[in-house]
Image 1 (tube, rainbow, N blue to C red):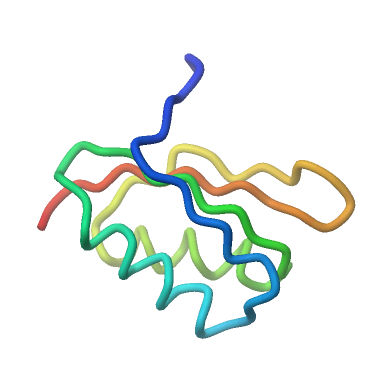
Image 2 (image 1 turned 90 degrees about the vertical axis):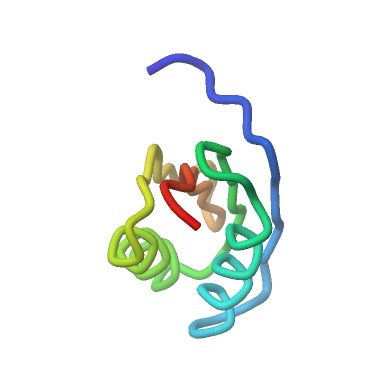
Length: 81
């Protein structure tokens, strides 16, 4: 996959579910269709739940990557308003 350049980044390390999804959902709602959101988080359960919830809301999960011992990056493209 090509190097993705996110249009917006949020750092929600330190938050747990359901706040991780709430913050992610609010961030993507403020974006335009087709834009890409990068989410940095450090809660393992959220690394599974946030992508699943984003897909259930009709957005495309482009990447879920564990970047070190405790952090994940999730990249999502907004597909609709």
